[in-house]
Amino acid sequence: MNNRLLFAHVGCSKTGSSSLQVGLWSSVANIEAAGIGVPFVGRRAHRRRLLDPFGWHPAKGFVGDWDDAALEESSRRLRGAAGERVLVSNEDLVELEPEAIERFLELTTAAGLDLHLVVTIRDWAQQIPSEYQQFLRHGMSEPYLDFIGQVRNRTGRWGEHFWRRQDPVDILTRWKVVDPSRISLVVVPSYAADPDGLFRFMGEAIGLDPALIERPKRAVNRSHGMIEAEVFRRINEALPPTFDDYSSAYKHLIRLPFSGEVLPTEASARIMLPETELGWVQARAREVVSEIGGSGCVVLGDLEALIPSRTRTSRYTPVDDADVARVSVETFARFAEMTRRLVAERFDEDDPDDEPVADELAVAGEPPSRRGMLRR
Image 1 (cartoon, rainbow, N blue to C red):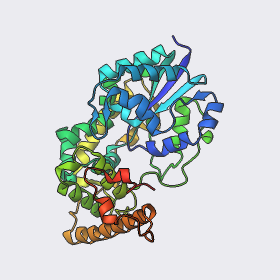
Image 2: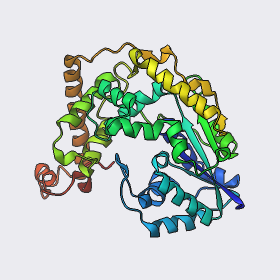
Image 3: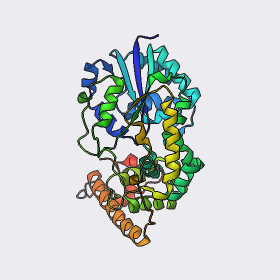
Image 4: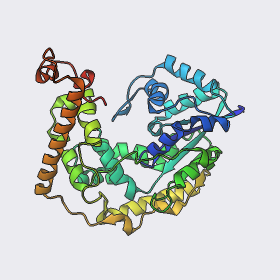
């Protein structure tokens, strides 16, 4: 038995994790003063120290080779963390394969830490629409109903990806080397009904006064409506192969601007689970509730909330092409204005010695991101 505890918040994605992490990283001084060490601050540090060493790639998962030297360095950093307890938080860790999980356990044990998991979960009537938007931002081009079909049947790249990230039973099966008594499952309540719920339950799971975690002052992840999501999907579908597999060009020219200010957010009807899909979602939720109830894990929140009601659904209505065209034109105009502003910051329009902007941006083989095109 080791002396210190490592609380690893490993997922799930789209459960308020980004908002929670913004709060955690802005509250490191408070957290460490309370006796909880934070060895990796920010997503970039977690990626460098915990994801990349296990061969993680965006939109693909843990498909690369391990970097054993980097893993050993991460173990040393975990050992050197201050405090009676240690905290890491990254939702992509939930996708680790059993072999990598065993290696992760070895590293934490070598660091003198007892591993405890925290897994945040929500009902699939919320998660399916949320992940659909997230996958669009990773290049997915499947229509919404096709994506739901993949999830329902656990088929295709995106359907399988969803289950690995969102199904609590699948997650517990892969993380079975961790004793259930050391796993806390947080059922994240609706933000509208309980905006402080995630922070309160997270504090309870790791033994931290939630008042010590600063709350983000603005929305961290904004949602697209049905029409805007369809515009995003059609752009993905129309892109040439050079944008495949979450390339640098895709990240800087599509995902970042379109997830931010270019593509309107929440301007049309919300993406919801079609009411015709509720039956199988409820059936799977009941199976999950039964499995979790008998798992021996610590459950924080209302387990029955994982079974969605009809109020979480809506009648599915295909988007109108005229609306898609209208939003596409608005999106192009926004993209042009964003580009104009960024180019103005990059070049001095009054300097006759400047190269023409078009020539500068057309340098062959150099991604626009390296020329400051999308830097703020």
